[in-house]
Structures are given as structure tokens and as C-alpha cells.
Image (cartoon, rainbow, N blue to C red):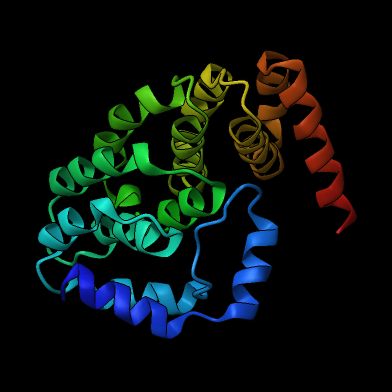
Length: 215
């Protein structure tokens, strides 16, 4: 499967109505086709069965949101890739993340991280400490998805979250999201964690916790 095949298939899957809906959820995003996420994931899984590295390279010039996102999913879905190969591709991909949807959808795809946490964590540290909005969000959402479910990693997360100091909106929202889930899942962490977060992130975290209790 080539980049041209991917583009043609995505255009065939695009829905004008869904494009308008998706654009309303992603402020500032104007270059998207309108492909639903389940369909995009199915295509990414199929594409990853072939020469995923070649396709990953071919798609580096893609501009529409969906082929960019599919490119980011390939390292997660490639069935026989090594952890080193996945991380190398992800490192090349992260600078192209331009909105929360691309970030979060691709992070959810990297399930290998939960099987190789000790190897993946050092890779994530520069992103957690990055001043760039979506690099910091990427590192934080990776912690949320693949480290927070493991109780033995809770002390590490409690230590790392305050180190995410990027003040951009979607980075702060990711830290608050992760901090909220951490405090709700492991209540003993709240007094250890919350005082060390910035005032803005503390406020966001407490609001998320209140909203969660109201559901």
C-alpha cells in the first residue's frame, strides 16, 4: 500500500458532514477530510501489515489531518516492529503533531509502551520537559494511557507530572487530565501531587475531579 493508495482510500471514506463536526471540535484545524476514527484505524492496521516503514516515509509530506494521523499510528500497529523501531518512528512523528486529536489518537495506539515501560520512560522524559505544546502533551498522555494503570508506576508519575511546565493550553489540560485520573484512582497521591502543580493546573485538576464526581 502506497501513500497514493492511502490518500485515495481516505478521500473515499470522507464525509462532508463529519468533516464539519470534527472541525468544530478541533480549534484551528482546517485541513481535514472528514474520516471517522474507527475507519481510519482499520485502514492504518491494514497498511501496517505491509512495508510500514516505507509508507511512513512516503506520508511525511502529507498535510491533511487524517493521513498525518494514520502515519502516526503505523508504529503502533506494525505487528513485527521492535520497540527501538517504533520509538525511532515516533520520534520522527511527534514534531508533526499539531492538535489534540492527532496526539491523543496516536498515543492510544502505542500499546507496546505498557509492555516495555522501563524502556519507554527515558524516551518520554524530553517530551515531558519540552516547552512545546504538543510534545509536552504527547509525553503526558503517554503516561496517562500506558503507565497510570500500573500501580507500581504511581510514585514515578507523581514525581514527573509537576515537571511538565509547558504553559500552553493543551499541555496544561493534559497534565490536569492525568493528575485527575491519578488522584481519583490512587487517592493517597493527591496531597503529594497537587501542591506541586502550577496554580492553573491545580485549578484545572480540581475542576476535573469535581466534574468526575458529579457524573
